[in-house]
Image 1 (cartoon, rainbow, N blue to C red):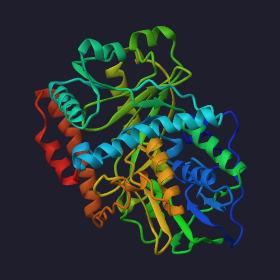
Image 2 (cartoon, helix red, strand yellow):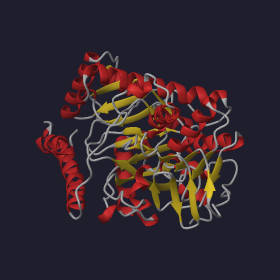
Image 3 (cartoon, rainbow, N blue to C red):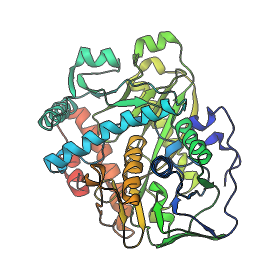
Length: 452
């Protein structure tokens, strides 16, 4: 258990008030709805349940403090991204799912404004750069697919892409307006305070060992409730019987010191667009409200047995690689101080398909598998769970991710071998595309094996 939460992430370090843990569960308790996990999924669910039925007794339990997991550590994107491609879903279902994701971005911003939560939000959209011929080919294919499904993503030539983000070796890119940069810890902690003020009980430093129909069980007693919601995302494997349900994959992030205006004049991001590129091994970034460059990416190994440990949050080799990649993209950042380094696990289902649902026979519900795109997807999950819990049919409960069941991950050591082989393959694929300019066949095979 932490004693100083400022080192969780830049976002926690920037909080105006220091994080003081709430009381832990001290014995058996009862509620109408018990939610395991006080991150975005759990808190959005509580928020919308309170809006619909203020009399509900809602209890949230968290192994650490509200927002300690991915909700308070992510890259600060509130986007309309969904982890499976549009073409993976039937056309009508895909359009409905992506319309719901676009609406979720607007809804997060609406609630933050309406509730007075200062989360440093800038609705600048996302620019995705193409920096090799293979990446430019993927950019064109993505825009063509989006148009087929009624989306209006913009294909950018080199000059237009550089007008958003002046990185090195830019050949073009894409732009979508459906993303906002946020300070995620401020948003999640603000939500926690809000739902608590409205009557929810939040027990912190209370690890749940097992979920069963009618109860969330801890070593200090259980919370009995007819509805129990699992909102644990990357930490799901710690629950008894769920080790293979979700693979916890680590994403690591660095942040620079606040940068002077002349540096930003050179780099761009004048609307605080979030950004990435079309490489296979994901990178992402944003310009913060106080003028820092936040830059993150995958590359940390998957750990045998889905282990989750504090030491995995910081991998010096990966931090060094992130800094090297960042300065290769933006030479103006060479020599700038890195003030924060952090990371944490995100949740990936075997078919990379996020899902939400409620078993009405057992009263057990869940949401997760966001693959790092959870800041907005959790909001959609919370609104959907609110309807499902109250037995209200709605357009949300008809979306294709509702009730979706992903198959389990392979047993170890197959899971470890496959995950890390895939990581290595994508690294090699990016190198091959940079050298040869042609799309990687290896990446195509790996994506097919993952069901993407």
